[in-house]
Image (cartoon, rainbow, N blue to C red; front, side, top):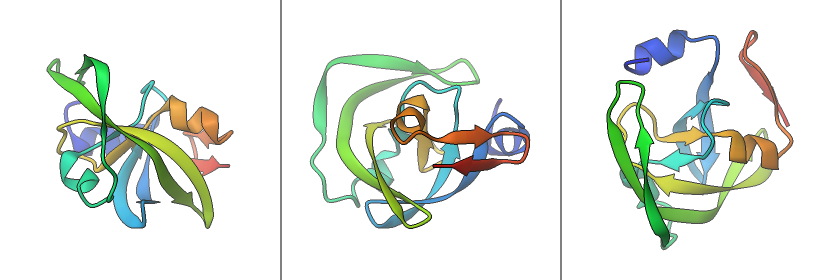
Length: 122
């Protein structure tokens, strides 16, 4: 997948607006992603100081580039349909989405994702 339009057309992900730390963000819910991520621009609005990861790591993008993840915002409140959940969001310099919610978050809130109908149940 090479950009937002390609991702939006994919039947394997869900795209929508989530509320994270009381801010509406454009989110990609991607069960193919192990972890969850946030852009630095959005993260600076959270009012949370990030922790530095003990070992930064590289995240491969769909177009073959790598981006370094070195900071994490722990315990971010993610509201879905009036229900609060928690997520640790790794800061990642990406441009197509404000957050990418991966399997770590989906698993923690017992989410059921139906990619065919593009719905998620908590």
